[in-house]
Length: 179
Image (cartoon, rainbow, N blue to C red; front, top):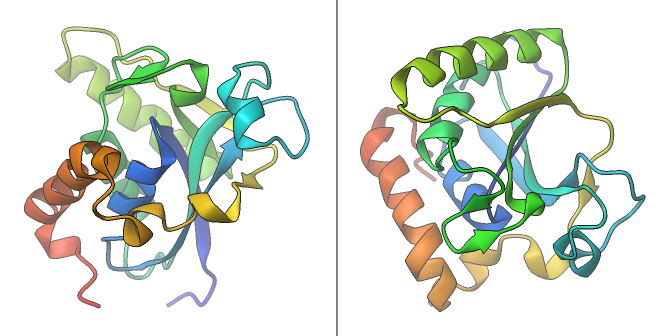
């Protein structure tokens, strides 16, 4: 048994949706929406949305590896977005919405690369998910944190986040947080 919380960082469209889906999982201690993969320090949402910073909207998942494994997080991440869409997910278009796994160590890099390779065989179109080392993670502004929880009736959340949550609840029932 390990007492160290580990971290995983994923981007697959709007961070509100990915955050809400990941929070459903048992063993996930917290999920923070933010920005990574770019070249500007402390970017704002507006700067990231301009496409000029190189950052993607991502979530950083703090998890207990004794309760949920990294490969299980990968499975949920890839099940809740389309990794064949280049620089977009649903109505959200731009490089900030790209599919990206930002690994924290060589083990995560290896696991994510193997997962992406296997997934590429399942799709007719190429999997375009980027695999990059995490350099720096910047937490998004406070109003972006726990957005779905705070705004469950928001039209965007109902149309895009809610179906992802329902998919996680249906497909990954054995991994759900019972809290």
